[in-house]
Image (tube, rainbow, N blue to C red; front, side, top):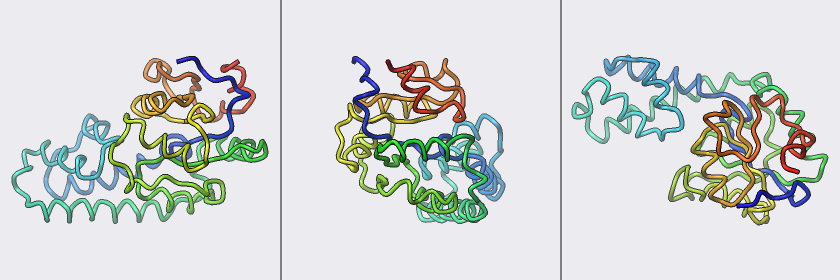
Length: 225
């Protein structure tokens, strides 16, 4: 697909975790508590494997790590996953605007001042709560509701909905991601993709930045045109 011209862009569709803030450390802490409770071994490999995975799938991975998957009923598994989310939300509750990643607040202001539209495409059901703690709710009047989705990333559904919410065609939007599956989702939706992080991992992104502080409209235009 031929990349859009910067002048064609009318809106931005953002992922949340790893792009606007980093809540992965809170997820890890909360899952570690669950692993300790059930007696499953915790490792860096397991921690990394849980990133971007749904709540119930994450729990299954933890139980499998300790060969415990047959030790719990479905109802007990739901209770464990709910307990994890409660612990996670206690950590989220302590978030402040200081948890916004470098340069993001300035970039959001630049987008808004430039007349671009904004939506959020996060798989997290807690995204509205996180935005509230970061005091960024006003920037994202349109948020994709994960409950309305039938497929997760790398399927394009979430990014197509993100464009639809702001009444734009996919080719008029830029999607911003930090994960390979997310970049794949943006590309499949027909939007221009920005990948934040390791360029070898995010090699399929149309535009690459090593970290959030490099994101400005001028830097994006430079890479697109």
